[in-house]
Image (cartoon, rainbow, N blue to C red; front, side):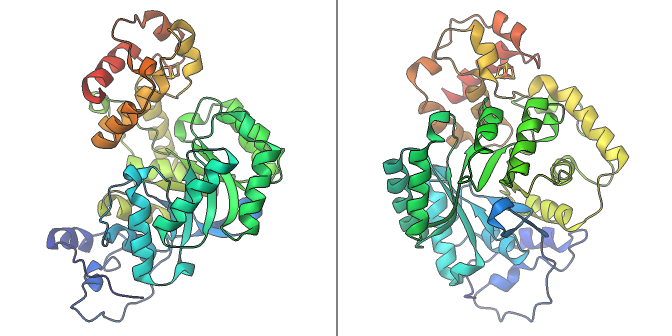
Length: 399
Ligand code: SF4
């Protein structure tokens, strides 16, 4: 493996030096080019699970690539790899198209494509659009194939068609993709998953799933159907983050694990799920996630109770994206679920630029609600989200 040049700051190093359970393991100085690389003891590797019908084992923790990355060398990519988090979840549009270029540069630096599982996604779901986007992804990623190719944020069931199946088969035959599926975080995810369960050519699905979904019978039935059909299931948006104003409510008070770790462990406890993707934007978060993945002990009863309590206390701050419900009482075109998701990116994730960019890409009618009364829409919301309050905030920070 080539040694990248970028040094990790002393501050980061000191932080990493005190990792509980990983003491001495995360040693980023090993990446400093001018230092001799010390003999490294075998590092603990994140456990792996089989991804459905692909028969391939992937780590249970995946590196989400919707991040601003150092284009030359990003230490987060390197640290993930060292601990067996070799699955990198890319998309054409992540970080304004720069995640794929950073990934390509990093893979080139490491010099061994086989060390990586690369997933990417096409925003265009037509056969021609997928082919065009894949060609661009391969160019940016500096590779001639991806391991898994998704239709990104699928919403329209019409793309689960014979035409799409033929396009996926062609790309596989050409050796440009190994497996095919879709990602989905819209309100009709359960319907799409039920449909996909009937289709032998869907290898894997990445979908929004977190501790707030446990009572969701429709989603659970769809997960059962996919699991029975041996479709590999990957959970995303596992943190179930509040739309905004998270600090106004009681914080999660668990025992052994903090909230980020507890929600991941709750997802991994579901045997239908192969893996969870996480945007590990700091080394600190990565350390916590890896520590949670390496510890096979289940969540304690106290942690489970704390998670349930937290879910109850913050239910009114979490938008589930079911905008077909509140949309019944709104003028056509207004997308409450999508807008509040972008607000969550802004307020909870801290991705201000990306959130504003995504919001700007919405159709004009989805961005004009200044004179809309949200009272009736809020009355329909099963989670009692204060839609008017959050939409006001969205107008302030996203417009
Ligand atoms: S505001 Fe409520 S009804 Fe509307 S999308 Fe969010 S959770 Fe669903």
